[in-house]
Length: 457
Image (tube, rainbow, N blue to C red; front, side, top):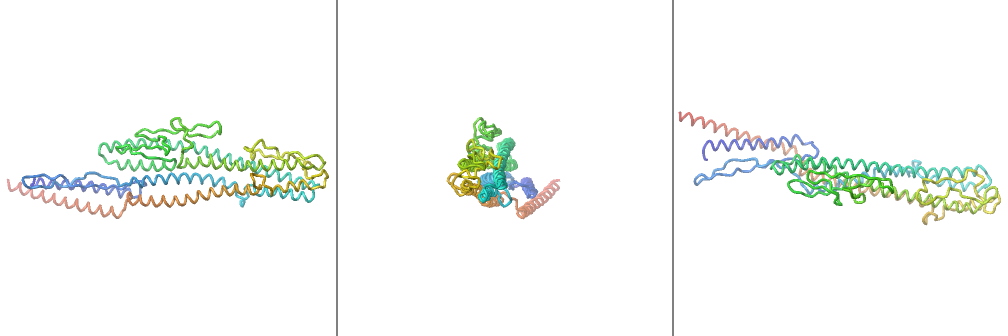
């Protein structure tokens, strides 16, 4: 070493290294707006020196590797928060549709029908023999029963729609796990062959982020750049280059879809992503509201029937059932119906005389009696609406707070992995100047070599 040819080799290695750095920087600039792209950094290092006699000569510079800048902890936190946001967004999407069924200001819900029913009884108490007022009682009762029927049917329809969404979400999860498994193999292959796996890692991370929006995901480092993905309960999703599909199967007891992993029912173990929000609505929120609605319908029908049987109709005959007797609490709202169609059959009298209003007043008093699990009918209904609204409000509050956390995490993630166009422009100039200087050195050495050759000749 210590020769012109050695200096020329140093210059050429410098030009190659700076050329690689320029290429890396150019790629960063090109991907400044690419979602999920992690900026790459050229890692330059001094080439191993050589000993010539008592002298040590440098051999230039080499591009050791191109590394993608990522923070695995931030990536993990973003995925975790994405899981929660996916669950809340999914829950709210359906919950707000359910809430619209009980929007009294927009004319939906049962409050006005309950009020109208008891108001019609109040009107009848002023003139128990009036057939028009009696017909008004039957009409308001039929409207009330119809409102219960329609609300119950709407809840069932919503539950079936969410159940369909569960099936669709499972299909999307399986598509993503297949793609992640394929990219996982590419990351592992690039890592094993000492190639830059950065672009594949970026692609995989984007896919995992999409998967996190759908279901709870746990990551395990499997070595060689490979990841093993499972649900938080341990159900396998991706292992190396192999994906494990989730399946759905109809539960004969509910006619709803259960989620299976390798033959094991994991429905109750899903805790994050859109799938968790859908299951919460389908298996908890809607059944709870439906049960409250059925309890109200059953309690009201039984109480009215019991009191109605204590009176006498317009013909002096003992009163019968006013509503069709519920066969139980479950399904009471869907099947609620008025049992009589003849207005003279309303048992308004308590002593059998046509003008007596004793029993209709007793029926009217039911609105202020704790006949629904220790509550009045209106209070029971108000609590149902309040609970629904409270669940929506809580989810909205958590969604807002979680969205801020996710935004902060993404900003931190961008600070590590995002491309700063000003920084990259400065780097480009720096590498370009180094390349130009090396080229000038090469030109100078070439001139010296030519001079030396001419001298020898």
